[in-house]
Length: 254
Image (cartoon, rainbow, N blue to C red):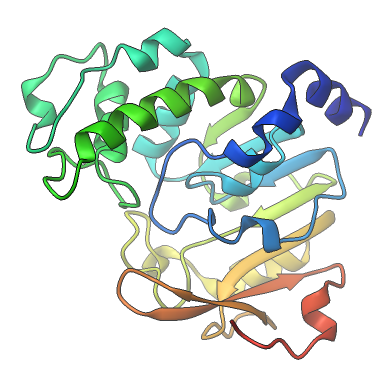
Protein backbone atom coordinates (compact mmCIF):
# COMPACT_ATOMS: atom_id res chain seq x y z
CA UNK A 1 0.00 0.00 0.00
CA UNK A 2 2.97 2.36 0.56
CA UNK A 3 3.77 2.26 -3.16
CA UNK A 4 0.16 3.06 -4.02
CA UNK A 5 0.10 6.08 -1.70
CA UNK A 6 3.44 7.30 -3.08
CA UNK A 7 2.18 7.10 -6.66
CA UNK A 8 -1.00 8.90 -5.64
CA UNK A 9 1.06 11.80 -4.29
CA UNK A 10 3.39 11.85 -7.30
CA UNK A 11 0.63 11.66 -9.89
CA UNK A 12 -1.95 13.88 -8.19
CA UNK A 13 -4.56 11.13 -8.18
CA UNK A 14 -7.39 13.02 -6.52
CA UNK A 15 -7.77 15.66 -9.20
CA UNK A 16 -7.97 12.92 -11.84
CA UNK A 17 -10.47 10.82 -9.90
CA UNK A 18 -13.40 11.74 -12.13
CA UNK A 19 -11.45 11.42 -15.39
CA UNK A 20 -10.03 7.95 -14.95
CA UNK A 21 -10.91 6.44 -18.32
CA UNK A 22 -8.70 6.39 -21.40
CA UNK A 23 -10.62 5.16 -24.43
CA UNK A 24 -13.91 3.43 -25.04
CA UNK A 25 -14.11 -0.27 -25.90
CA UNK A 26 -16.92 -2.77 -26.30
CA UNK A 27 -18.12 -4.07 -22.91
CA UNK A 28 -16.41 -1.34 -20.90
CA UNK A 29 -17.27 -1.07 -17.21
CA UNK A 30 -17.17 2.74 -17.26
CA UNK A 31 -20.78 3.14 -16.07
CA UNK A 32 -20.52 0.74 -13.13
CA UNK A 33 -16.85 0.67 -12.14
CA UNK A 34 -17.65 2.46 -8.87
CA UNK A 35 -19.92 -0.41 -7.81
CA UNK A 36 -17.09 -2.94 -7.54
CA UNK A 37 -15.21 -3.60 -4.28
CA UNK A 38 -12.08 -1.59 -3.60
CA UNK A 39 -8.80 -3.46 -4.17
CA UNK A 40 -7.31 -4.96 -1.01
CA UNK A 41 -3.85 -5.42 -2.53
CA UNK A 42 -1.32 -3.05 -4.04
CA UNK A 43 -1.09 -5.31 -7.10
CA UNK A 44 -4.04 -5.42 -9.52
CA UNK A 45 -4.26 -7.94 -12.36
CA UNK A 46 -6.81 -7.73 -15.19
CA UNK A 47 -6.51 -10.88 -17.33
CA UNK A 48 -9.26 -9.82 -19.78
CA UNK A 49 -8.15 -6.20 -19.96
CA UNK A 50 -10.26 -4.56 -22.67
CA UNK A 51 -10.30 -0.87 -21.74
CA UNK A 52 -9.04 -1.71 -18.21
CA UNK A 53 -11.57 0.46 -16.42
CA UNK A 54 -11.01 -1.05 -12.97
CA UNK A 55 -7.22 -0.72 -13.26
CA UNK A 56 -7.60 2.89 -14.42
CA UNK A 57 -9.76 3.72 -11.43
CA UNK A 58 -6.90 2.48 -9.22
CA UNK A 59 -4.13 3.43 -11.63
CA UNK A 60 -1.63 4.25 -8.90
CA UNK A 61 -1.38 0.58 -7.90
CA UNK A 62 1.03 -2.03 -9.28
CA UNK A 63 -1.04 -2.91 -12.38
CA UNK A 64 -0.76 -5.79 -14.84
CA UNK A 65 -3.18 -5.99 -17.75
CA UNK A 66 -3.41 -8.92 -20.14
CA UNK A 67 -5.51 -9.62 -23.23
CA UNK A 68 -5.49 -12.08 -26.15
CA UNK A 69 -6.60 -9.48 -28.69
CA UNK A 70 -3.34 -8.41 -30.35
CA UNK A 71 -4.51 -5.03 -31.66
CA UNK A 72 -5.80 -4.07 -28.24
CA UNK A 73 -2.57 -4.86 -26.42
CA UNK A 74 -0.39 -3.24 -29.08
CA UNK A 75 -2.46 -0.05 -28.70
CA UNK A 76 -1.96 -0.12 -24.91
CA UNK A 77 1.79 -0.65 -25.35
CA UNK A 78 1.96 2.17 -27.89
CA UNK A 79 0.02 4.51 -25.59
CA UNK A 80 2.40 3.68 -22.75
CA UNK A 81 5.35 5.16 -24.64
CA UNK A 82 3.43 8.09 -26.17
CA UNK A 83 3.87 11.71 -25.18
CA UNK A 84 0.98 14.15 -24.93
CA UNK A 85 2.04 15.67 -28.22
CA UNK A 86 1.97 12.26 -29.93
CA UNK A 87 -1.76 12.08 -29.20
CA UNK A 88 -2.64 15.73 -29.83
CA UNK A 89 -0.84 15.71 -33.18
CA UNK A 90 -2.80 12.74 -34.55
CA UNK A 91 -4.77 13.72 -37.67
CA UNK A 92 -7.81 15.92 -37.20
CA UNK A 93 -10.75 14.02 -38.61
CA UNK A 94 -14.26 15.27 -39.29
CA UNK A 95 -17.53 13.50 -40.00
CA UNK A 96 -17.23 11.14 -42.95
CA UNK A 97 -13.41 11.06 -42.98
CA UNK A 98 -11.70 7.68 -43.40
CA UNK A 99 -8.48 6.67 -41.63
CA UNK A 100 -7.12 5.19 -44.87
CA UNK A 101 -6.86 8.74 -46.26
CA UNK A 102 -4.53 9.97 -43.51
CA UNK A 103 -0.87 9.37 -42.71
CA UNK A 104 -0.05 7.75 -39.37
CA UNK A 105 3.39 7.16 -37.89
CA UNK A 106 2.56 3.55 -37.09
CA UNK A 107 -0.19 0.96 -37.38
CA UNK A 108 -0.98 1.22 -33.67
CA UNK A 109 -1.80 4.92 -34.04
CA UNK A 110 -4.20 4.13 -36.88
CA UNK A 111 -5.90 1.38 -34.87
CA UNK A 112 -6.18 3.74 -31.92
CA UNK A 113 -7.89 6.40 -34.02
CA UNK A 114 -10.15 3.66 -35.32
CA UNK A 115 -11.41 3.10 -31.78
CA UNK A 116 -11.89 6.72 -30.76
CA UNK A 117 -13.75 7.76 -33.93
CA UNK A 118 -16.50 5.31 -32.99
CA UNK A 119 -16.65 4.71 -29.24
CA UNK A 120 -17.64 1.40 -27.67
CA UNK A 121 -16.82 -0.85 -30.62
CA UNK A 122 -15.12 -4.26 -30.60
CA UNK A 123 -12.55 -3.46 -33.32
CA UNK A 124 -11.10 -0.33 -34.97
CA UNK A 125 -13.37 1.44 -37.45
CA UNK A 126 -12.27 3.51 -40.44
CA UNK A 127 -14.93 6.18 -40.92
CA UNK A 128 -15.87 8.99 -38.54
CA UNK A 129 -19.57 8.90 -37.72
CA UNK A 130 -21.67 11.51 -39.52
CA UNK A 131 -24.18 11.52 -36.65
CA UNK A 132 -24.00 14.69 -34.56
CA UNK A 133 -20.78 16.65 -34.18
CA UNK A 134 -18.50 13.65 -33.87
CA UNK A 135 -15.43 15.36 -35.31
CA UNK A 136 -15.29 17.71 -32.32
CA UNK A 137 -15.88 14.74 -30.01
CA UNK A 138 -12.78 13.06 -31.44
CA UNK A 139 -10.66 16.12 -30.67
CA UNK A 140 -11.99 16.22 -27.11
CA UNK A 141 -11.15 12.53 -26.74
CA UNK A 142 -7.59 13.13 -27.94
CA UNK A 143 -7.13 15.94 -25.43
CA UNK A 144 -8.56 13.92 -22.54
CA UNK A 145 -6.50 10.83 -23.35
CA UNK A 146 -3.31 12.88 -23.66
CA UNK A 147 -3.89 14.14 -20.10
CA UNK A 148 -4.24 10.58 -18.79
CA UNK A 149 -1.16 8.96 -20.34
CA UNK A 150 0.84 9.32 -17.13
CA UNK A 151 -1.43 6.81 -15.40
CA UNK A 152 -0.18 3.81 -17.37
CA UNK A 153 3.58 4.54 -17.53
CA UNK A 154 4.37 2.07 -14.72
CA UNK A 155 1.95 -0.69 -15.83
CA UNK A 156 2.92 -4.12 -17.11
CA UNK A 157 1.05 -4.73 -20.38
CA UNK A 158 1.05 -8.27 -21.77
CA UNK A 159 -0.51 -10.14 -24.65
CA UNK A 160 -1.64 -13.62 -23.71
CA UNK A 161 -4.22 -15.83 -22.08
CA UNK A 162 -5.48 -15.68 -18.51
CA UNK A 163 -4.07 -19.13 -17.80
CA UNK A 164 -0.55 -18.01 -18.72
CA UNK A 165 -0.41 -15.93 -15.54
CA UNK A 166 1.30 -16.94 -12.32
CA UNK A 167 -0.94 -17.15 -9.27
CA UNK A 168 0.17 -14.01 -7.46
CA UNK A 169 -1.21 -12.56 -4.24
CA UNK A 170 -3.15 -9.69 -5.81
CA UNK A 171 -6.55 -8.20 -6.53
CA UNK A 172 -7.75 -10.08 -9.60
CA UNK A 173 -10.40 -8.23 -11.62
CA UNK A 174 -11.71 -10.79 -14.09
CA UNK A 175 -14.06 -9.50 -16.79
CA UNK A 176 -14.26 -12.09 -19.59
CA UNK A 177 -16.61 -12.05 -22.57
CA UNK A 178 -19.90 -13.03 -20.98
CA UNK A 179 -21.17 -16.60 -21.29
CA UNK A 180 -24.41 -15.28 -22.79
CA UNK A 181 -23.81 -12.07 -24.74
CA UNK A 182 -20.04 -12.20 -25.25
CA UNK A 183 -20.10 -13.52 -28.81
CA UNK A 184 -19.31 -10.16 -30.44
CA UNK A 185 -15.78 -9.81 -29.11
CA UNK A 186 -12.91 -10.56 -31.50
CA UNK A 187 -11.74 -13.08 -28.89
CA UNK A 188 -15.26 -14.19 -28.07
CA UNK A 189 -16.97 -16.41 -25.50
CA UNK A 190 -16.83 -19.24 -28.05
CA UNK A 191 -13.12 -19.56 -27.25
CA UNK A 192 -13.66 -19.91 -23.48
CA UNK A 193 -14.14 -23.09 -21.44
CA UNK A 194 -16.20 -21.54 -18.66
CA UNK A 195 -15.95 -24.53 -16.33
CA UNK A 196 -12.16 -24.32 -16.55
CA UNK A 197 -12.26 -20.53 -16.12
CA UNK A 198 -14.46 -20.85 -13.04
CA UNK A 199 -12.04 -23.24 -11.35
CA UNK A 200 -9.15 -20.94 -12.25
CA UNK A 201 -10.96 -17.94 -10.73
CA UNK A 202 -11.61 -19.82 -7.48
CA UNK A 203 -7.95 -20.82 -7.22
CA UNK A 204 -6.53 -17.27 -7.31
CA UNK A 205 -4.46 -16.04 -4.38
CA UNK A 206 -5.61 -12.80 -2.80
CA UNK A 207 -8.85 -11.01 -3.73
CA UNK A 208 -10.88 -12.15 -6.74
CA UNK A 209 -13.67 -10.17 -8.41
CA UNK A 210 -15.42 -11.79 -11.38
CA UNK A 211 -17.81 -9.92 -13.71
CA UNK A 212 -20.75 -11.46 -15.56
CA UNK A 213 -24.48 -11.08 -16.06
CA UNK A 214 -27.20 -12.99 -14.25
CA UNK A 215 -27.73 -15.43 -17.15
CA UNK A 216 -24.35 -17.03 -16.47
CA UNK A 217 -24.23 -20.36 -14.64
CA UNK A 218 -20.51 -21.10 -14.36
CA UNK A 219 -20.19 -19.46 -10.92
CA UNK A 220 -22.60 -18.37 -8.19
CA UNK A 221 -23.05 -14.80 -9.38
CA UNK A 222 -24.96 -12.17 -7.40
CA UNK A 223 -26.98 -9.45 -9.20
CA UNK A 224 -25.64 -5.90 -9.11
CA UNK A 225 -27.46 -3.55 -11.44
CA UNK A 226 -29.73 -3.63 -14.48
CA UNK A 227 -28.14 -1.95 -17.49
CA UNK A 228 -29.41 -0.92 -20.90
CA UNK A 229 -27.01 -2.29 -23.48
CA UNK A 230 -26.76 -1.33 -27.15
CA UNK A 231 -29.23 -4.07 -28.08
CA UNK A 232 -30.99 -5.22 -24.91
CA UNK A 233 -31.13 -4.87 -21.15
CA UNK A 234 -28.91 -7.02 -18.98
CA UNK A 235 -28.32 -7.37 -15.26
CA UNK A 236 -24.69 -7.06 -14.26
CA UNK A 237 -23.54 -9.61 -11.69
CA UNK A 238 -20.52 -10.32 -9.50
CA UNK A 239 -18.69 -13.21 -7.84
CA UNK A 240 -16.13 -12.44 -5.16
CA UNK A 241 -14.12 -14.65 -2.84
CA UNK A 242 -14.49 -11.92 -0.21
CA UNK A 243 -18.03 -11.07 0.99
CA UNK A 244 -19.61 -7.98 -0.57
CA UNK A 245 -22.87 -6.10 -0.06
CA UNK A 246 -24.32 -8.08 -2.94
CA UNK A 247 -24.10 -11.30 -0.90
CA UNK A 248 -26.16 -9.96 1.99
CA UNK A 249 -28.78 -7.83 0.27
CA UNK A 250 -31.69 -8.91 -1.89
CA UNK A 251 -30.78 -6.36 -4.50
CA UNK A 252 -33.54 -4.08 -5.77
CA UNK A 253 -32.53 -3.57 -9.37
CA UNK A 254 -32.57 -0.03 -10.64
